[in-house]
Image 1 (spheres, rainbow, N blue to C red):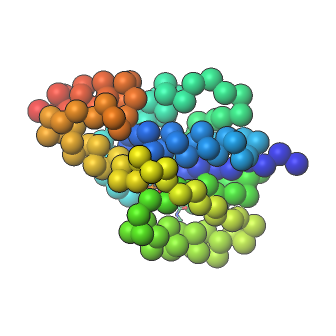
Image 2 (image 1 turned 135 degrees about the horizontal axis):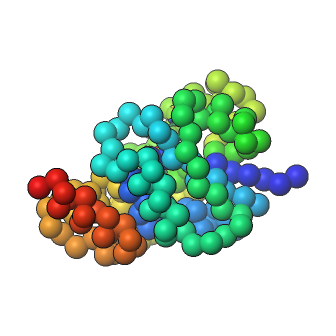
Length: 162
Ligand code: COD
């Protein structure tokens, strides 16, 4: 059987931290589906389609990698595409409580689904989409945190707004 892992998130926007998990995930699973949540509760800077386009622009062509969106419950989306594994990244201890809660909840609503975690790579331990947005909005250089298309999109978005 092919092992398809879903890597779900807001990806607002995608960072080198997310890319690291995607690339390492491809070493372990047959297929990775990057699934952008449409109904993320967080107020997003980028629209869902902008977030998808940015991911597509930076992941490169790989027949084992798909970028998709989902509405509603993650586990329902997973059932619809025949995946049983949620891939998540863990940074500091501070991620643990939130991740623990959603992993328990997802397993409770669908016991076929397991969440597997990959520890962040050292250079990305402090990196988050929120921090990148804050640094960019204050005029800081974000080249170390996001690929060029994402940086350009951030600058364009922030210029639009001001
Ligand atoms: N290093 C390693 N991992 C990282 C890094 C980094 N620097 N940065 C981010 N990550 C990881 C995160 O830990 C996470 O695992 C993943 O990348 C995505 O991160 P985000 O912030 O883009 O995504 P989240 O946490 O906002 O995603 C939350 C979901 C959208 C997955 C969740 O809200 C959801 O499933 N919603 C759908 C409704 C649902 O089913 N709810 C029930 C479950 S609670």
